[in-house]
Image (cartoon, rainbow, N blue to C red; front, side, top):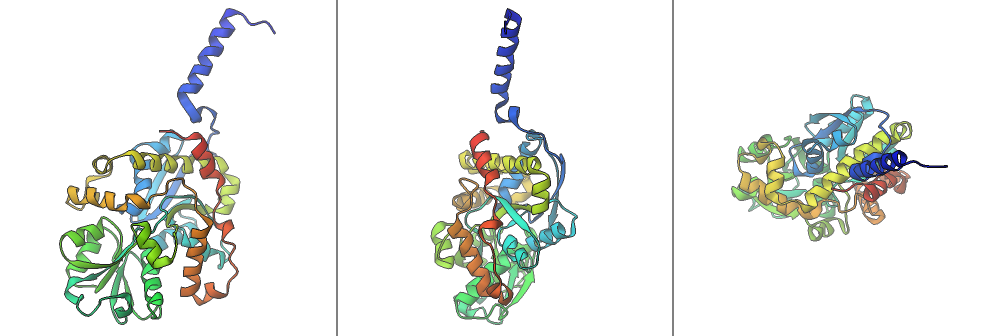
Length: 345
């Protein structure tokens, strides 16, 4: 075929445009541009990648219009997914395993946190009698919401210390200012929670930290290995019907992870709503640095980490202990793998 000068110019222009657009030039449009996403405690650093994806416009960049419903805890966002009021959840990976035993096919598609970043601390006023998780019997433990990852982590610590999961009373105290107030007002003896709440209580001298999974060392001390935490999960039938939509959601979060990895704590503080700082921006910045190690570097879950979560659940839940759980099936890696190959800052 003979090409004239105009064809060459137009072809070169198209190629230049494709290079300028990057991976979006070849991306397929989402089947569902409008989505509702559930999360439990969006202001917590546990869900920082979600906030960054929203605030920096990454959802829109990948063709999505996302409405975020913020619930009191992760268990409630899971219930909303099962009930059909949200399409996707930013929540704890363990829910995908639990739901298998209930006949609900829920799959994670990108890891946001490779360590739980949950801290278990005791109110200083009772620290003389509650020195370890073995002393939690009869205590009032504050968690974001019963059934959420903060709840499960505290229970795991109790079982590991020789107690039963129900040897303490668990109280849902939400996130942010309500959780801080619950400790300061003496409503709970122990708190299992996340930053910036924990850092605020530590800085004010209100708690003594017993367990800290913000770091790899702390995570391994409690769980014996890595322990995938926050992730994005969907019902599998949604994934099958809307793969381009799922890819767009994963791309937005993967780009947020890249941004977090290269950004300073001050830049993170600038990016989030001011109310997330809990009235103390320097403390928020310090919280970001404490949690930074926990964010996923690849978006991919390790099989050993996934098995670690499954083992924890089996130790806590009699139903899980006897159930056959297909651990590898709970995470679909191809979306994060494609994001890694195509998404750039």
